[in-house]
Length: 403
Image 1 (cartoon, rainbow, N blue to C red):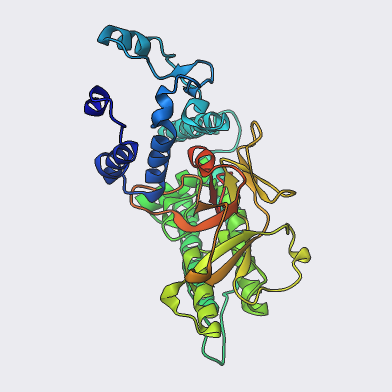
Image 2: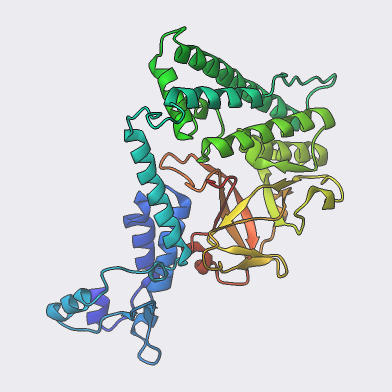
């Protein structure tokens, strides 16, 4: 860079962006979507436009004019750095103001969870219900809601790819039900003194008292950040979907959030289409299209290839039903429930996309962890804006909200 400047040569921005974004820093970033953000920053903030004397460039004008310092000595550069505001709004980094609200909400929940974990009181001293009585009552309420009948799948023919997914989902669900039934039964016995209270039962009781999902259940349940009350609604809705699927066959609309392994359904859709159309499995992929349907009654029929899915949430942007594309978020609207999304298997060489943002779909709003767990698939969302806007806004979809 300095050599090009001294010799009055053209700065090789493309080379610099590659070295920084792919080699020096990008090589340490294992997540492809994180690397996409890094390279987008470089494309937006590195170029000859930095030194354009005709049109002054600002990195941001949100609350302060963030500009590239003019050529000077060390003291002048230090003075420019000291003059920068101590606190920067989200817009400085390309984010929407809602991102700050979301950050504070997550921080508050973490503090609340820490305080709940440290509490040691037993309660009931003021004449109210004791801790043990509350746990026993809540455990009884949960027991009453757990479905009693076992779901069994029967088929005289060779199961289709989607039926294989159903069988696997039922097995996982029944395993969770057995764990819940046995745990709650032993917990109530331990509260009455009929059996000893071990660490596992104590943790179960503490989670129920705090309104949190017990860790023993979370290990064999779909990934979630929901509190216990909302999780039970999710649990019962999963059962309803399995019963309907088992009784009436493949539904026209799948509730993707209600599957333990949603990726298996997506793979089965591709397999089914490849068998029907004689496609090569390794040369087929999924394409998504957002429909205008928001109610199952409005869906005219099942898709021959693929399916409709419901329950996807959009974060970092909003979906405009009239224009059928992404639009900027409204203030204080952090997340939006999407219309039904068509998931369509296609041959990769026939897919031609234009103005379609590759959007990651995660299981929860925590997105993906360092081990890569949490990403389900990549959706295509139509946009009239440049991709960089949505990349820096952190646009993504998820199967579950945290409420």
